[in-house]
Length: 300
Image 1: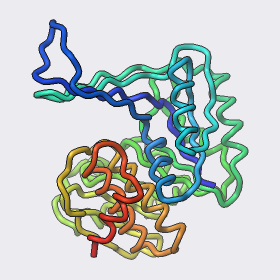
Image 2: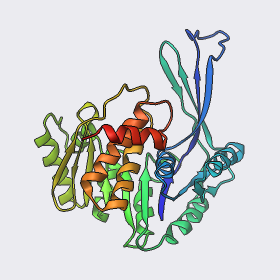
Image 3: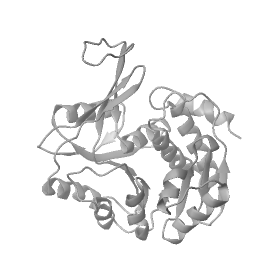
């Protein structure tokens, strides 16, 4: 089983209005609600690929109930930890002449809530995969990811897609996969990476520090993987018009895992990951299985 962790999920309320005017009444032209959070995005794409997963994290209040019911209706299994203080956040994303975002804070997660969550983590079995995605809420300790990994069976494979310091702190636990982009990778070594050789060298350093596989997204230049055998795989970017960058990286993680679990072939995993990331980027919202298949056929 694959488990995804989203510590602070959200309902993303996406609205569009013509020529937004601050301080005045504005009417929405279109509005949509999406189930937000990096780990949840991964679960959604895995679902499109026909792969089961369980979404973990914290929810609270009526918004948390709506999030859980929405994912259940999509056929995505959830095992959230419900907390009493606050409610699952709503993120408002306003699209007009400029894009504006107002992100909610989320519920207060008490030590007892975290312990209830860790009980679920301890139940994850040998051979399963745990995906840690996104940032840690301000009400939780900065070593939360480390505590989660310490409560896992040692034979659970960990995937991490998070900020610089969070990734660096967990390398000692030998995560199966980490996915920085080329800018984040450079930040880890206090440099700016300009060439593939520089990216490969830094990815190999992360492997030396403990990562099993290092997947680096490179925006318009495609993606690069240094695998567990120290082999380098590269692929160009999918062809299409980018209309939405939200969730593209999460889609790549889901596609990579899906491709690897189905074939054990890292080159194919990179290809499917690129197709999933591109399909999401080319459409509003997360990609569907049909959209992923269409992009996959265009990659060589």
